[in-house]
Image (cartoon, rainbow, N blue to C red; front, side, top):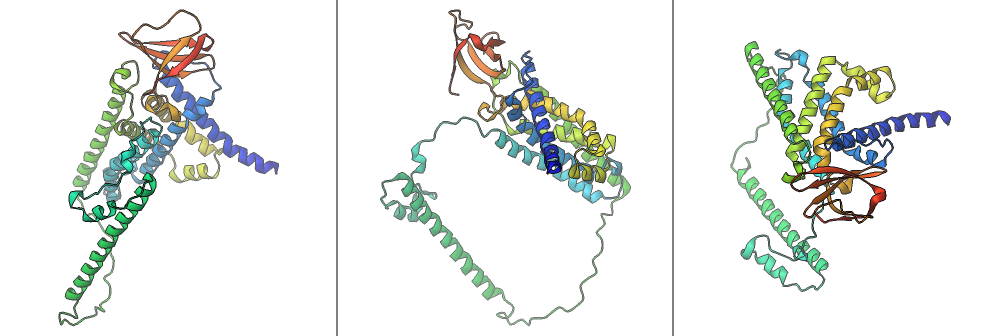
Length: 383
């Protein structure tokens, strides 16, 4: 029994430490952009803040590891496995962008949105004024809005799906009737010839064409990495970000995602990880020397990615779901001394056990650490 508990603790402790460490690095790198350094080591906020980079980096590492195995740098400019390399070249950027769209939607789930007007539940024809079926359905009089919406749209969708299926079935029947060999007087012949022997497909490109193709795609991927890295530098979150908006967009997630995948992929090729042994070690036991070696060698690119995440994406994730997006507030202190001027906009960007951290924007932006003992209340304003 004790051994089982020990094994379970090994599985739970390391992911918990990684989650906590990710959150600590992300929050610290975010606050450091405003010259604020918190010395709190124990905070539940680090665990919540670590969820987002853990999800992102898990996807990043999975894709980088897949690219490392299917697109090894040792095979560049060789005719060997060129078809698989070509597929990787073409599929890598679109797949990363798709994952970035999914991540941006996931990160943005907690954003505040005003309630929609009740009129969206009113029945409206999709096909305009010539939609005669909708006119008939609209004559059904139900006082309750929800029941009216459900019943009318059920009848509406059911009717059009039935019409579509009926028309498609009739069209298929007519096509088979007039195109079948027996109806045209043709004799049905059975091909009994043996199946052709399947031969291995070969691309058959000349070596110089393989070299040019590889160099073309590698140059494109490097160019995209340089663009992504420079774009991240323009999106670093600081005092100027309050002027241009603090919302998250999929393009920002893409450049972070792509630069992280590219960096880890290059690093894997530099240290030349053994593809099979490392995978088996990580899956079977996280405490084996091979697994520890893997984590140690990946520390540099992972930390770089975490710092960039904390300085660009984390400050744009809604605060309601554990992100660091600033909230506009009004702070009332216990003393009669007003620390804010008229017209100042105050944004809460974080807090520690003893302080709250705010940014004041007016003519000259500044960051303040306010002792919690000096605060009477904090009024949150609706975005």
